[in-house]
Length: 506
Ligand code: B12
Ligand code: SF4
Image 1 (cartoon, rainbow, N blue to C red):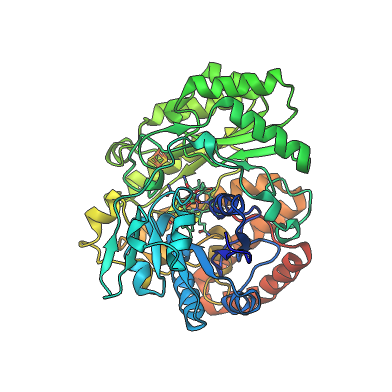
Image 2: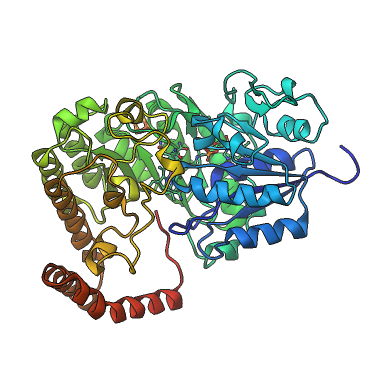
């Protein structure tokens, strides 16, 4: 390498409606890969819960540090903000490289939005070559698995995405580059605790846009994970970990080895994971619990058997119920995700999911009414491909027509802004829902909101319930009056939130 190291800035783009309390693993991995041979790598996570940055602030930072190349993660929910930022950076003469789930799904699109090139799929095998080629240190056509414009303006693809062959060979994420204060208090359990132990999922759910890592389940050895846990624990004192894998238990022997290792080495930690309902059993859950597992997230998705079949979910309603009960009995908290509003669903189908949510609620401490709890047709999914013509969804993410930024107090009633706290997907109305379907979906979200209030102190729970009930009644009588009467409540809540700081939004 030359004497002055090449400076690369890795950006996670800003969002007006979301934040996270841990640094995204993708840019941490790329930073680690570039750090090794001596690049001067900086990370700017514009969505860090304790230090959110606007596009204007990012541009000022770039003017200050003058990176040679800027890499950006693209995810569909933040794409318009990311493209706006890219255009601002381009005006400053920046060299821009895109990667991440959205860039992989529609790799040519970022080239018309200010980016110079796009890496498809996993970034680790390519990032160094990509940086070199963008700086003219190697021919662009020699980089495998990316997309760029040649000197004549022609778009060139250099093969399909390159997979990491042996993920045990990857360095640990560059946690040392994270400023802990960006993510809130130092006790924040999400700060250094994210781990990945596998990539890929052999299932093909019709709504899932996780094609980046492919169908083949590739996994790290149990020993490599134990080593990383021990390293992070010794270096940062972290004792709570979260696996970001899509389906960590696809290979049962491997997760058993990992659990046995945690027990044998007396690593006194707790951890949580996400996996598939069809990839657990009582024995495995018992072992996981003994190894410190405290939470398992399941994509249950629907209580309607026909919907489960049509989305190719590899489980039945019965299997989902059993998984949730078995998890609780094993001493682990189950966390369940649902998706409402598939285009073929009528009120009865949504009702079936509602009934399943009610049935599971005694086992579930807290439901997650996430943005994606109402179907979003992400690009590259079977749902998008099948329904884009019928519902006029072509490239919806580029326009304002299906904007699902979180409900804003200025435009939504108090009860809707609470119940749909994370996103106004019902307003985005991808599938022209009938009034009846919309009402049913609201009812389900309302149930989840009320259930989640259980965790609050009795007075807070009581006040919140009354506010929702009153807002609903008043809104039915007069939306204008509801807005007038609830605006001081909203202001008071915003003031309290600012004082208490941001909480993890996920
Ligand atoms: C952990 C996680 C979260 C966390 C943290 C997200 C974060 N900011 O990192 C939380 C819970 C907050 C979250 C929220 C959401 N998430 Co999420 N999340 C994940 C999950 C499970 C793991 C992400 C991860 O750490 N992967 C491991 C790292 C190593 O991979 P990676 O980030 O993809 O990075 C690699 C490549 O993409 C590439 N790369 C990435 N950036 C760059 C940049 C450059 C320059 C280059 C060259 C390469 C490159 O190289 C990296 C290394 O190989 C993924 C599923 C998955 N399997 O990836 C979904 C996923 C990213 N989430 C998704 C979605 C939809 C959401 C939500 C909308 C869900 C919701 N709540 O309703 C929100 C929106 C969040 C937002 N603001 O964008 C989708 C995104 C789909 C899309 N089209 O963009 C995914 C793919 C899930 C899925 N299967 O559909 N999520
Ligand atoms: S099981 Fe999960 S990760 Fe696998 S395809 Fe289905 S939704 Fe995606």
